[in-house]
Structure formats: C-alpha cells, structure tokens
Length: 366
Image 1 (tube, one colour):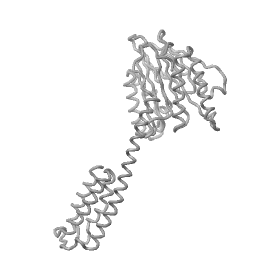
Image 2: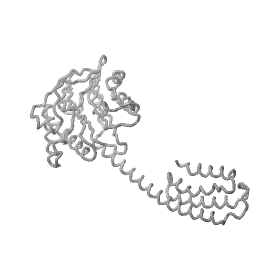
Image 3: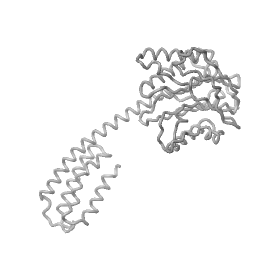
Image 4: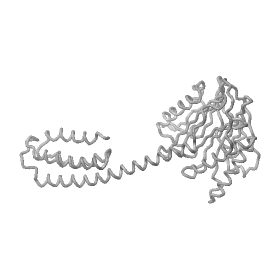
C-alpha cells in the first residue's frame, strides 16, 4: 500500500504519451492525494498534492506528449484540474489525519487488551512438580483479544487444581464474569481441602455477583466449567464437571473422553437443583495427558459446515507434549475453518511426566 501512489504516477506517465491529445490522461492525477491517503500520513498527502499539481503542469506544457503544442499550461480545463487537485488534496489530508488518529487509538486499545488478557488469563506455569502444562486462547473477534473463555492452573497444598470454563454471552459482561470466576477460584483453591467445597464456594461467589448485577437475566448468567484436582501423592485425578464438554485423556494406546454422564448444572444454576457435586476419579499415570477445552473447538466448522473432528485429530497427535500439541491444534483449527473462527477458544493441556519433581510451595491465599 505504501508504494501505491508511486505505481499510480508511473501508470499515468506510461499512458500519457500514447493517448490522443483530446484524452488528457494527466487529469487522473487529481486522485493522487486520495491514493496517498490510504497508506500515508497528512504531511505525505500534502506533499503528494503539490507533486500532482506540479506534474499536471509539466505534462500540460510539454509539447512532446502526444504532439501537444505549448500553451496548454494555463488553458482553462487544466487550471480547473489544478484547483480540483488542490481541493482533493485538502480532503485527502483530512482523511489521512483521521485515519492516523484511528490507527493510534486502535493500537492503544490493543495494547490495553493485551495487558488485560495477561492479567485475566495469565500464562500457566509450564511445569509444576511432575506435570507439564501449556495453554491456548483464541478470540473469535481478532480485535477483541479477550472474551468469556477462561482457564487457570494453581499449585496448592492439595495438589494442582485446574479450571477451564466458558461464560455465557459475549462482550464486557462476559469478561467481567470471567474475571470474577477466576478471582474466586484462585482464592478458594488454596483454602478448600475438598474439591466439591471448592466448586461450591465458586458457585456461591458467582451467584452473589449475578444478584448484585440485577436485571431480568440473573438466572441466565451462567458458566460451564470443569474443575480438576491432580494430587501429587497418587496417580489419579478428581473431576467435577459443571455442564462443560468432558475432559479428554490421551494415553499411548487410546484417546477417550472422561464422561460419566453425571455432570452437574453450570455455575449459577446449581441452586436450582440443590444436589451435592459429584466427584469422578480417573487414573492418571506417568505419560498420560489431559486436554481441557471449551466448546469453541468442537463447534468449529469448515466451509462445508462440518464440525471439527477433535478426537480424530488427537489420535494422530497423541505422542506430542503439551506445547507442541496445542500449537498443532491452533494451526489446524485455523486451517480447518479457513481462518474464520466463530467462537472463542480456550484449551489447557497437562501431561504427567515420568520424572518426579516436588511441588513448589504454594503462595498464600489472596
């Protein structure tokens, strides 16, 4: 785009000598300031305007151009062209100034969004004890950067506790809800010894927040989530699923969903049922890997409308460690959808290494 004004002028210079006298191609230089405004600032556009008027005068007064005699320099049609070029130049300069201001504003917004994402969805530790971890987040809106999908991994005295969730809805309300949920989880994960008690405390926080917001949609402000606890002293995991897509266990010989069919309601809807949270326990041995994900992955469609075959893809990648697995998943999702994601996407991959390492001391609550 930055070279477009130069190419435009070159095209005019190539056409001018080969056109008849009654076809003054140099008049198209009137558009040069607007062409320059696409990629350059107001100073450059003003310079392009002056250059266009000068070049129009040179072409009008040059007898070698298509046999044109001297004397057209101040002919009234050419004078009108000079005036029009100047007016278009003023307009192009204003447009360039406006575009430059908008680009700076957008850059500032992106910078703030990047900072907000680092605070809201901070990178998970790549190693906690004998666990290797990595995360993936993709926003369906390229300019938004952040949305309602969330994840977290927290080392605690009770083991490593994981969370992945998907807030209903979009926009600032979804981001605020995700922030409230993550804050409640990060606090309670260190305090509650039992996984159901942790989920119940997060549920209470979410219900309180929805009530404080008020409005007729209180009952619809819910979050699907999965809570996972990986104790350091045992080769197993404990899972509480609150209406979220099931975890996927990746083992050397298999890739399968961990779904008992006893999922609890989404957070902020549990009060409607009143049943205690059910904990599922699964073996999680050295070499095993978990994939936690939001439904934006499985609901990704190709141009033909077919859903993304996640399990089929994972069977081809099951030997990959967390970082390489999520990188492959990232690129494959973009290729599958034709770079047109319809929903936010979050994923968290965790592998239990055969090499034992002690858990680092957990940070104090709060």
